[in-house]
Length: 258
Length: 67
Image (cartoon, rainbow over all chains, first blue to last red; front, side):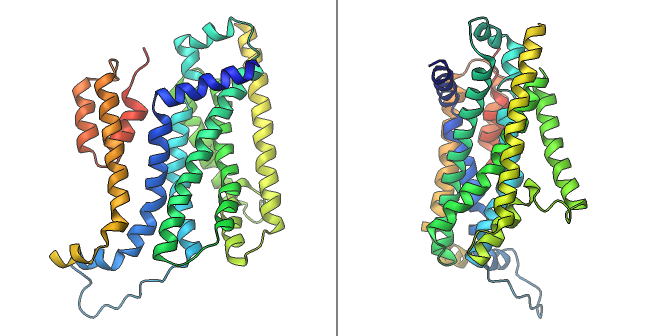
């Protein structure tokens, strides 16, 4: 199977350039940073000179679900940025250096070339997300209180859809532009615009992928999966599929033109 | 300050420090083996060593060059 070969080549490459080592570690660091620092906040304030006499600030007691959401918050900002940075060169970089010509001169289907790259990134991102949230869950359990493991798996499942969309946006721009910098810039810009539009028209865009983490938080609080969450997940999945199909068509027409 | 160090449960902090250590070591091994960089080789050495947490990440994303 051609697809399997291409996929294995991508996985091997991600292993050789050590993405499989450093990317999960970075996600783990992001996920456990907030649970640890919030737990030690009183000591940190004390160590840095303490509060002035007489001030009385009640530090909030966080619930386990709130702390898991803090980890997601870190992954949503810094994590998404790192994902864009590692994916912006996957196709654009190969086209610039001529590697893609070496591959595509053989009878390789464009569909396979793109989806294999996409799938290798998705496996990496989902693996890292799972490991990172597992580490966060471990800290939440020992420092804040119990959270069902099933809930954690649901968080990974739904939040993974958002990261999948981020990867797909980056792949989409990869097929449009040859410059790695332009791909990265436009991917970040698109994600920022999506969140801006959702914030402005939030009431009408309840199913926007940006709302996924809000709905995940509701799920943790209510302990049930709302129809909004499912609808948002389906919308996210649909946009992903449309973008991926679009990238294959764009890549096909661009390469044919060359 | 002494008191603060005693109050901290090291079993909680240790994984955080160990992961940073692994990142640093993996980055240094990769740096020693690689032969093409974006910029001077020694600049990346100092970035990996001295830029806290972000140093190894910056190296992995921007440091190496394929050409």
